[in-house]
Length: 380
Ligand code: GMT
Image (cartoon, rainbow, N blue to C red; front, side, top):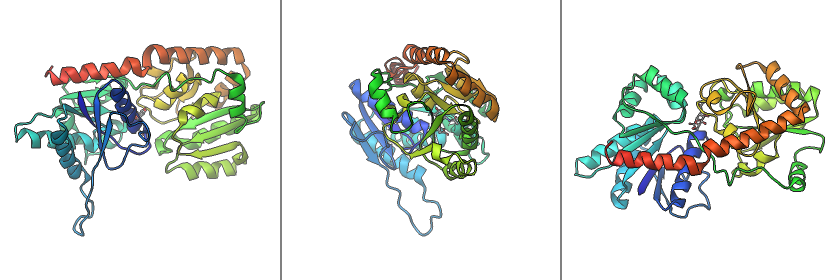
């Protein structure tokens, strides 16, 4: 198949999923064309069978807001025509599904077919999509898509409830490449790599996100401060975003900044995750929680919040621990309890990797997308 993929190319779960999907599809022999305003960050150096088409957005003194969605629709139609695309797959409904709808109509007016699949990721439904200025057009584009997928049952139900969507929505979960996201088997190699972050007697807690308010990074730092009172530990923060300096100030005020590593944006997170003992994900909402899945595949259990699609991914007490949003005391107590009970931690590490392998490996989930594409192409 020749597949066009549009996503947000910068840091964020939807862009990661779209990029990894493109890489996996190309590895299966499909031709993949990314269409976006810049190259998705996880693409570099892994581009066999993958093409990237930039969307130029011209400005003009009259435009207070240059219309990216129109430029994207034009480019989608051009790329589809010149490369004979079979279908488009857009990640994150706003504005990508609207642009795809326009591109489909532009080509249809000239006798060409370009079906498109919209994948809903989370805030496109639960936050931005609910904004009255976007809701009607987002609802229209979802309803008019040739196929719609959602990354969890929770998000599917939210979409039906808040948008009154009557068409079918296929749940295709997020996935992880179980051969890339792996624990480090060699204990000496793991200890050597961990030594760059912590002393041998210290635990490593990790967090991976785009530091948006929904990630509640202040809860993260407060939780770690409580943990660090009980056990020797370091906190490694991977990613960057608007709340990073808030986290830095809080760490400074709590006098724990010498035990926190702000790593910033990292491309090779699969090399960092297996160094951790625990992942912290205290988010106000996660429709899936991709960072927790990537950690699970590396045998790192999460201390997380019981929100959105997280309970579908994490079996509380078996593959991680779930708590109410904002309950930093309980989250810290849960983390300390696990770090002091090595047998329980080890059982959770094993259970997490097993769950990732049995349910979420790209080798299982990506064929689900391919089957769905075929159904859409066959007009089912
Ligand atoms: O807000 C974010 O976390 C980014 C957002 C995105 O679309 O880039 O993430 C959403 O999609 C991820 C990949 O499907 C999910 O793992 C996240 O749970 C989801 N975030 C939220 O629902 C808040």
